[in-house]
Amino acid sequence: MRRAAAALLVALAVSAAATQPAAAYAAPATAGRAGAGAAADTAPAAAARDAPAAPTREAVWIARLVARTPAWSAPRAVGSPRMLAPLGRWTGGPVGLLVLEVRGTWLRVLLPDRPNGRSAWIAARRVRVVRTRWRVEVDRALRRVTVLRAGRVVRRFGAVVGAPATPTPRGRFAVYEFARQPDPDGFLGPWALHLTAHSDVLDDYGGGPGRVAIHGRAGASLLDPLGTARSHGCIRVDNRQIAFLARVLKPGTPVVVS
Image (cartoon, rainbow, N blue to C red; front, side, top):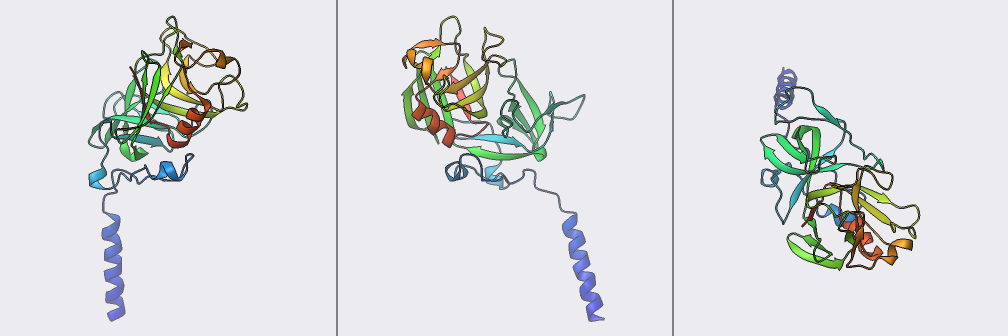
C-alpha cells in the first residue's frame, strides 16, 4: 500500500512539472569560433536580470538563429513571414542578429539585407539570445576605427574608408559573417568581416551585392595608406587589427559608422 501511495505521489509530481511554462529565452551555448575570450563575454538570457533589452554603448543582445526562423513586420504572427536562414549566405557560418527592441517575447532584429537599417520581428523562443559587450565605431572623417568593450576603449587604429564617390555608408550596422580568406597575402588580407551594411551607390562589387566589410590589407591594397579615403566603401585595416577583431567579435556585434 505504501509503495502504491509513493508511486502515485511521484506520478503527480512529474505531471505538475510537465505543465510548467518553458523559459521565454533559451540559455546560449558559450563555445564558438572566437574561443574562451568570446565565451566569457556571453551572458545567459534565462535570468530575469539578464533579460534582453535595447542596445546601449556598454552592451547589446544578439539573437543567434538555430533553425529557419520566421520574421514578421510587427510583433505578432500575422500575414506571411519572411524566413531567415541560420547559416550565412557566403560562408555558411552561424548567423547572429543584433537586437534593436524588445516587446514581451518578441525581438526586433537588424536584418543583413537591403535597404540598410531594415528590421523585422522574431519570436524569442525561436532563437538563442546572448549578450556581448564589444562594439566597433568607425569615424569616416578621422578615418579611424575604435573598438570598445563595456563602453571603454580597447583599441584605436587607422583605416582606409570609402572614397568620396563610393563612401562607406553611415549608420548602425552589425557583423554578419566572418570570411577567412584562402590567401592571407591577397588584397583582403587574412579576414573579411562582412557587415549588414551595403553601399549606397554600388549595386554590386567583389562578386557580392555591394556588401560592405571590414577587412585586412595585403598586395595591391597596401598602395592605399591607412588614413585615406580610397576604397569602394569597405573599411580596410592592418592585418594585426583584423585578426584581433576576428578573434574577439561574433556575428551580431554592432558596428556604428559616423
